[in-house]
Image (cartoon, rainbow, N blue to C red; front, side, top):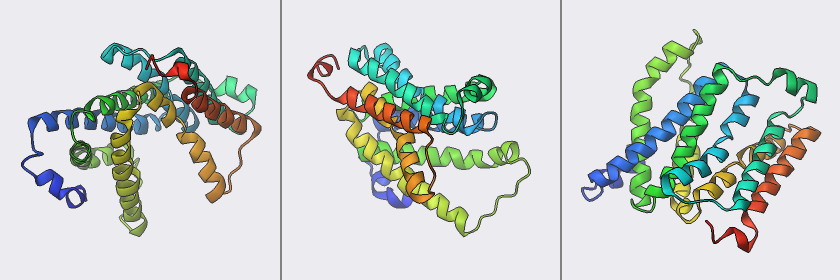
Length: 257
């Protein structure tokens, strides 16, 4: 599917340069490792805890930005990071009481693997910021997706043997519909948009903006699945949204970025 959509870009001699392949390779590896650790971590932890811990990339991104690019996010961005992370925590604890939160939130093997995945996602965001300014976006995205598709295809039999738990996989219409949707809309289109526009946004603030994902998830779940947020979930979504607005408003946020 990747070859079909990006055949002109991938087959062009001008685009098959070493300077393009190496950045795409590192970008693809960081994304693939992020998805892998997050997925494997879900085997040993709950979706609630996984969602919150994955959101920890909002903390890792500004730290990596300092270490790698020697760029220091503004104080406003740091404050926004803390606010958003607290909001994500409240969202992840939707429909749970305070006693349940204190009793069941533990940090084990699954949480550790998910945290590694969050760190890989932070690296991915930083690499997009660096390489999207040096490599043409269509070239970077096409090679990135191609490498992810090739490696994932080779690892698919291994994943089935290790994590399927004897559950048979049915290659029916729903399976291929899911593959097409996640490949085209959830991967190719979103990655293209991210790589194209993130280069104009500092990595730390981009990480804060990406953390709106669970807020949109709950909004769509409300519209499509008629799910409801509890009071703590509503507060969490409001806090996260406030953190986003706080990070984007104010003249004193711009010079230090």
